[in-house]
Amino acid sequence: MKAEDFQFPNGNWVRELVKMSLTEDIGTGDATTQVTVADDKIIKTSIVARQPGVLAGLPLLGVLFDLLDPSVTIQTLIPDGGRVVKGSVVAVLNGPARSILTGERIMLNFLQHLSGIATLTAAYVKQVEGTPCKVLDTRKTLPGYRHLAKYAVRCGGGHNHRMGLYDRIMLKDNHWAAADGQVAELVSQGRQQFPGLAIEVEVDTLPQLRQVLGLNVEWIMLDNFSFADTEKAVIMRDEAHSSSLLESSGNVTLETIGSYARAGVDAASVGRLTHSVSALDLGLDMEQ
Figure (cartoon, rainbow, N blue to C red):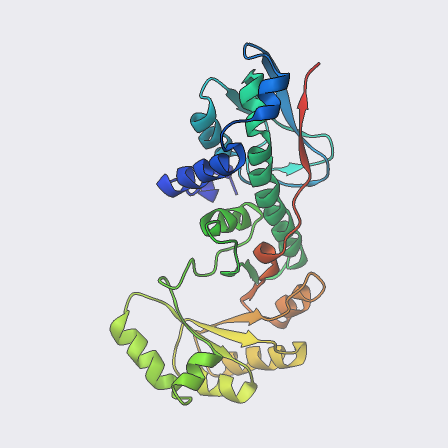
């Protein structure tokens, strides 16, 4: 996959998010930099990887310095989706020292978080190699970061589940309960009111799966199924000649996703890709 295929989510909201981040950090001014750095000092710095990983978020550098100081030049050496090792130089920045040092923390905050998502996603993707199973993200993202986090998932080789509540109908256990278990009626209403949207139904048991297979929904989520029941679910789907795709969900980990994939599901969704990821260690080094 080429970097341009990841489709960085440009838009006014990205600029506003970066602007809010700068305002939050700088406030009335960067007091330390004003005290320690001459206003005419020009420096050359490099963003360097401190550990192996996969990059995501580099287009944000242009947005950040366009707001902070457009005179800062940025040379990207490794694109989003690219792999780094310890010591890899990711990008080179030239310009006023005050501007680069003021923007350093916000720049690294974005890059480290998003690259952490891409790196973890790549590890999950590696576990399903040789199977048709796709690694999916969820809506468990930091508020305001949804599109960026899902972009980072794509950089790591994963795929996006629904972006929000508006682009897929998802009937989970609470919806079943609210409708007294009349899931067929819910699917029918969904088709009538939102004919352009895919429908996914969550099931907790094999009897529930049997009930849903005849509804011809696009996706069926197997929630917290064992490996054995997942295999049975795939067989049931195939024997029913259903076109529904099966998604494993619930406590899918690096240790378990391979077994779910080999059981024959079409996808596995992983909340931890975005809700509790560790940052990738990146730093800014100044040339002496």
